[in-house]
Length: 307
Ligand SMILES: NC(=O)C[C@H](N)C(=O)O
Image (cartoon, rainbow, N blue to C red; front, side, top):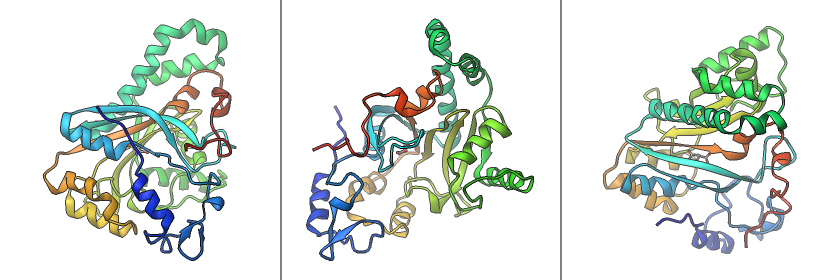
């Protein structure tokens, strides 16, 4: 019934220089206003989706709870243990759900998968997994996840720094948490999965619902030991005027989002969703600690191009 497609028309306009790219920092350019794909992440023009979320919101508003499971792409080098240029993501979109509901769903889902693996694959894991793996899964399946706001998370990290803990990345309210901070929270501070919610609006996407303080958005990340971020999600901004303002505030053009804005313009419903990184999820399980070891044929920056 539904297929996520890339916005080829928009990409063509970008290539012809019909969309003002000059205003966008970080996009390589040639001849003044055309995009220089040779200097871009994949070295040539590529049509890749980072998420099916916006289209999925349309489906959810029409037919109720929905999900997709498919490939997603990020312009991230695959040279570290945590990033892949291509990965698979499970993305549910849930109607009549707020940030509390979506945190409950995410926690229940991770617990369910962990328990399922314990019940069905214990023998396999005993054969191939590291020693702590089954215990880790049991802990994830049975322990209530800690829930802290981003502001509380920053306070904990600042206290740790005062106490002598050294991080490579700066800890400051308003800056995104780095992997090392996320792992500190889940592995050292709480020693169990942690859900961090209410992030500063400046570091999150325009579609996340603005909180009453006008500084934070109803976003949440689920962090788990050994992996860091496993899930990212949010309550979606359903108020037409507010989301329009957020798009403009982030320097994005309104035109490509008109169809998305229609979902608010002509009446709407409270809804929320999340994305679970499938490869990250697999790292929680067996003894494989890097994403590359899990997927021998995974696509990297050099290899990945969809024509
Ligand atoms: N469906 C989601 O909320 C996931 C989010 N759009 C992402 O790409 O990470």
